[in-house]
Length: 382
Image 1 (tube, one colour):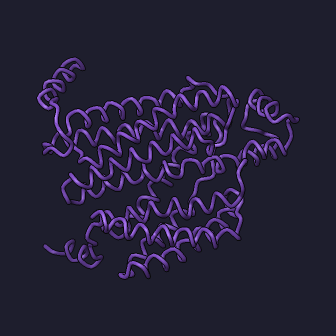
Image 2 (image 1 turned 30 degrees about the vertical axis):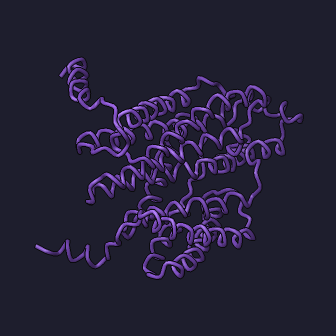
Image 3 (image 1 turned 45 degrees about the horizontal axis):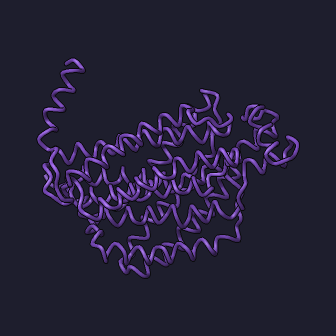
């Protein structure tokens, strides 16, 4: 079929739905799937663009119209279109999901010009933890949270729906952990400098050195590549990253969800690593240790008492993060590890886990657990 015919058919199908209505109106199943599959496509473009963007900024001087920015913009444009559709028609979302999506999209769109102004004023501002960058993550955070709620509330309760819910959590986890990629790229950039084969182009190194007011040397490279304290990376992964996995496990009710979500993200990061290097872009240290921690999160849900599960799970998962991170640092590569911070990371995760246990129950987001034995019996039943 010709593209013109496909477009005409799609418009003919969609136009009857283009009517104004309140959030929460009954949504036909085929329209519901199209809307949320559209979100999957939008987030795919955004993730591909953002992954390339970090690598790009460790090699080239910043450019507003760089290819990664353009690729990310495709996802942003699609997300904006979907937000308008949800808001105008009321299809596919309840009021809470719609507000989350609208606020998230709004924050993101405000953050984009602020980030451009920030770079005009402050130069590189390469750290992922700058205020304007954080606004981008926060906007995406609310956006995906609204999509997760919308899908959770409106999708049928079957295995396929759980799988797509898990996919949305992969995007959610990627966004939450995105700022930590600065350290993951930074540690390998320092190693490349030590090999006298720096990834960064001379124009970028000179610009960074001039901005810092010093010569191009190793201290400058360290300040450029690892500008945040060593404790931030493991603490952030433990608290912010693992609590996303806890929420995913609660909302799907399926054993192994945390491991699958973390494994999917790590698999994606492992796939783009050779694609970047073949294209002569800097690689990053892939957080393989996250999979070990995710397994511990899943194991914690064998404990039925929520408070006990939260505390024991936090202790087990924190030990897994720091232990596996130490091994990865020796065997492969990983950002510097401040071991003393494990106490703060574990305490933070325990508090966050307890709050999450309350939150998903209070707002009726907890899926009924499907016992492992039940799935085995169902599979064996003729």
